[in-house]
Image (cartoon, rainbow, N blue to C red; front, side, top):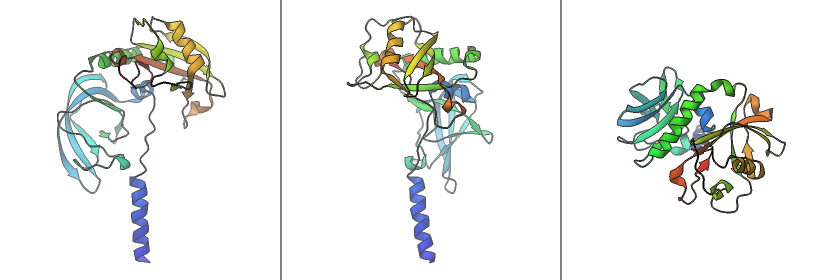
Length: 252
């Protein structure tokens, strides 16, 4: 019997380790809910705790958008031996990340589900877009009261990119746009009220939102039964000529 319990424990543990599923929120929600948002460089990783399967990472801030700077992250996993299936993550010295984190028990913890973006050296345009978006969110919180951000996808897409990629001569005055939308029972957008626009091809973008896009509504939220939401679209110019990568998108 003891052997049977041991086998069951191993099986259950394996299922738990293999069952990490991340439910991510839209960028705007993650930013508004974060206690800290910033660009950090990993200085060193150390101090493994085998029982808790955590280690520490000292960081250096290059930019901070929200919250206060701190020195050390708690990271889920073991150095170089983390299991993605258990929501663990490997990070290394000299890597750079854009992080949007909440504080738990007085410290910041990083796992594979944490809102983050590993940065390369050629992403200045991306960072400029995100910086301007974050500043707008901070200065206009009153416009979002009682509403929640959602993402959308091209339900009619028949190529490697959504319909937004067909827009020609797109010269936005700002790299983001925000809309209040009303959806129907089929998760299609039936009404659009622009809150702030790109300043280029705006009517065409609204038409694509109505004709092509289906929305992903929050599954576990007080607003999941509502019909009005917010959509944030971002423009990443450097993605225009990249295959399978979207220039106008609600993702990051």
